Length: 444
Image 1 (cartoon, rainbow, N blue to C red):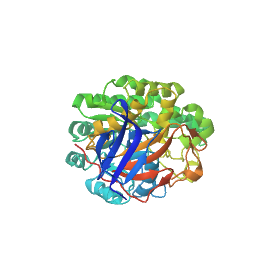
Image 2: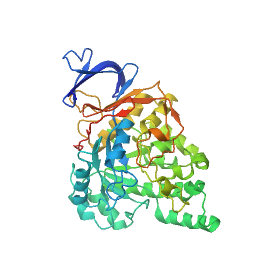
Image 3: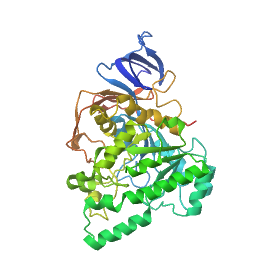
Image 4: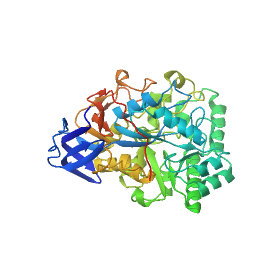
């Protein structure tokens, strides 16, 4: 494949503007933006007529299940689904087997991704009640951040020792990313549900078990700790209108405390449990329609800084179990950007805002070097979106190893025409290319 690529006739969406221009890509980077960018005689020309040219989505929260859980997904399969969905970089979570809670486990993950991940990659170091020395020793470039489960979700990584939490927020050299739910409150709600229903708890009870109060108690504690220690805090997957009062609007680059919403919390609400059941069971839970609407408005108002996936595949057999046995999480990376663009089509926020939340702000918050924007000299991580060609989700076009999606049967109004990673085509017109293009992300 040629190392040079020219994209012509595209509408480039970048840094709050939409411009019509050509892009010359050379040796993996954007060489020139402007008219006649193809004048150097490059051999590969991609006509983007009718398409938006966006910086590739940087997904700051995925679970690709490797090592130890590869019956559900792995670096190769899930990154393939990601590039099919316009995601060019991902940051992967530590709750695997064994968990990523020391520097050796981190480097093992980088070795597993090298030559297999189709998108660029970085990994979190997970916090536990007894690995504060590992956290204090990690440096930028070794991990994208420190993941703290302040509420139990999956696995055994709950950090509930108050002294340890104080130490993490006081001493972490990296951004702290938190899962915020209060475990004692959840356990009390589970006991109440068991008393009422036995083991056959309806899936619709999930947002009451993983309640607004449990979320707010934990997220308000995280914000208080970050303010007291002047920590860099990123609160993951916010789900309630009430929690929004903890955060401030404005550019992500100006904030020490930032917050993320996930595509499924912007898309589904509790009325969908009747049809989809465990297919949308996730932690924290999808909640009321009024919560979803408040989150969408907060994206538009620059209160929410990032939109991500929390992609978390499980097998269909696992998900088919009863409430307490069915694991939380759903596969999302292949359609996440299309889910965001549905809100653009609906007029909830403009395409420039979608790009800010899926690319620009992620790069700013995490300090991702030379990615997340369409700029001369930056790596060419791009996605071409056709806003007028629909995409119907069906089981025969899914790339997830788990083989299912809660979105099956849904028709999106947009489609991913092409995904470019490090200057080369990773996905084109409904097909993966043969290129394995992912590289380790660098952080400033």
